[in-house]
Image (cartoon, rainbow, N blue to C red):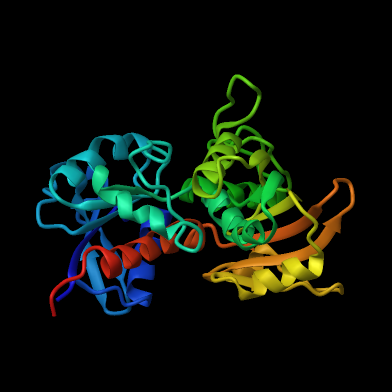
Length: 341
């Protein structure tokens, strides 16, 4: 006996990836419902190789009888519909930032803190972390277990898909315009994204950080350890899919690059590609469609007493969003929502 699953925001980049991931991982479903805004109602979207779903209107949908909702419609929409779905008995796994810092909502990366899922019943909502946070804490967890992390300095190189389909289209249209000598138009980004990098993701806050940088700090502390200090600089780069991060980590005790490499190789959800030679590292274009987080350039940082430097890359639409949500759902049904055979 399978589960009834709704995908909210099904026509977006993450929603489509959620449907693909559910099918690829053979999640036990009896019924899948694709939900989006009124303007998408009636359009068709693929679920696996042989199934096509007609998109239904989120505003009119009754969640009664739906077991799990994978939700990625934007924070404002989630604020309205996630509590309604939860009240109807549906467990909402929400990919937006709306509920991440709510103390009654678990913020979960299954390789890092699966035990937090046990508290899902407080609000019937589980939060999916920010894409850049997810791949970073997956890489940090085995190192934190080994030597306790004190401080993290991270610079991100985030692809345009993190800002949605329109952002990807803007990169494409600006790149084309440069080659054919057309006018460069900006709609999604504050500055030209083609052949450029923009150190500005989300809104600015009073202390000068952007909200994306704030998210990385507070989410890491909630998921991994509240005593870890984090400072981030988040940068949008002219890449379609795949986020990369340069991470400097300070530990409480000595840890060698060899120890770190061995621990990372044993950890779930991580692939280590770390050869000190040409092509001995991973770049964003190589991880598109991959489930694992990839770690390269592992080396000792001699500017602090006990430091390491890492290069971490992941597919932001998969592990950074859709896959993490589906993995939460898998853990949920295995440990808390098992059906009678």
